[in-house]
Image 1 (cartoon, one colour):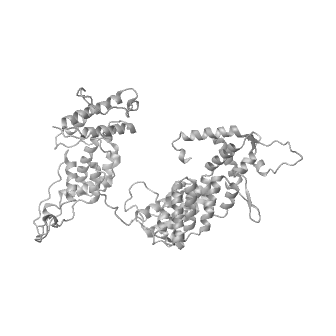
Image 2 (cartoon, rainbow, N blue to C red):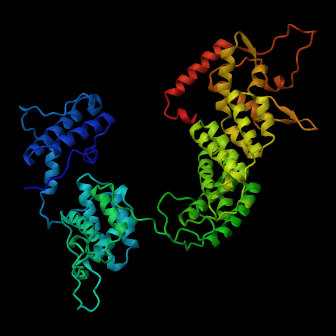
Image 3 (tube, rainbow, N blue to C red):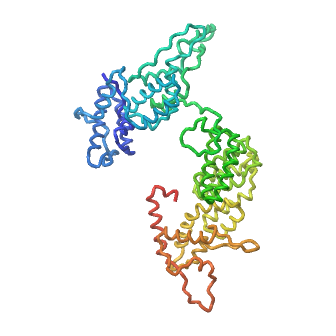
Length: 580
């Protein structure tokens, strides 16, 4: 009789090209539970054939599985239902009907070929036969539709090979006769289950050759409390966790990541999404030298290729340095400096995602004793975090930050919160209130009291805020509104400040403000009057009595409000509306 494998799983259906929607997943969960509840193997297999045939019929029907209302699809097999013949069920049984000693044919898969080539290149000569055996085991999982070659890396395949080598060549016991090393066992259909069972067994008991006799228990000691010493298992916890993952056991014990020190001497390295090796990571001394190198080169790039190219190069290199520091668990003032520099650069370039990662890391670093807070910019980055949480709508996190800050100010136990002046926090909260209320004059005056990076942070969300402000203005007013009034209300006009009455532009300069103004109304699909000139409206003063009937460019409030509402409805239909 062929071996039995679960076929009512998401992995099995996806291997046959079925797109799983949420109703189909729920239906699959219910039928798999009912299949396991059958009283005999024959009834279970008959129910599986019936359920798989229902999915096959849906795939072949017009519209596919998406046309079936799986939430109303019955999971109960009718008593008079004939024994259906499912092609997928027969294929799964034929794949397991092969002899246990027969080898699995290699898959003609480019991903597998590249993975095998990379694994064999990195494996030493004694390990290469076990690499082939490990791939044979993984081929069986792919053939059953449980795994894909894209899910595994060459490091994990090397771990499988080392585990197979450890089982084939057990550690010799001292003071015992050496035994000949058996050849690697041939891959079989049951090899994977045998390997998983062996790993599970080694974690709870010692090999037979390593067992010691239990000490004599005291007369008053119950037999079930006798202590039996257990030696170290041959298979590592990392290999055990990986084999458990292949077996589909989600609650396996996963070993902590191994700490290591990099050996790379490269001064430049970009961030990589693959698991870095020791040869790719740079130690702390090299990282300090690399920081001086990339800052010097960025200065040269700014002079030759422009500021934008220099910022892009510096951002990539700083992200790679952050990865090297994080992998090696290096937390000191140099780490804080790298994160702070990258966070400021991200604010200047408008990369809010990378800034969020940097500020989240800085929050953890500031709380560590290895960091000297007197050499860090704790205050400003706490204020940036408050404004960022407000503008991004994360009010729960904002409340948590303010509660922790208040407790630190009252109790004085938190060195981070105690070092931040309360007046600065009050100004940051006033800035948040000005952004929410659309008070652009107060917003500009408050930004002048902060660092330049605070202005960069507000500019990232400025276009979104202006749409909100414009909707509130048009909702509360009727008739025609002059564009000069809208420009002043939305912060497109400059604010004079200082003794020399210098002009502060919320967008940085008049050219940027004019471009943002045009982009705003083009986005909302509101047509500006043909006689409108941004510069003319900026320099225009209030009309005099000699010309009270002068006509100025204006917009109809009702028409503009309808355009804004249509745009917001359009945003609600987009998946990325939360980021807009």
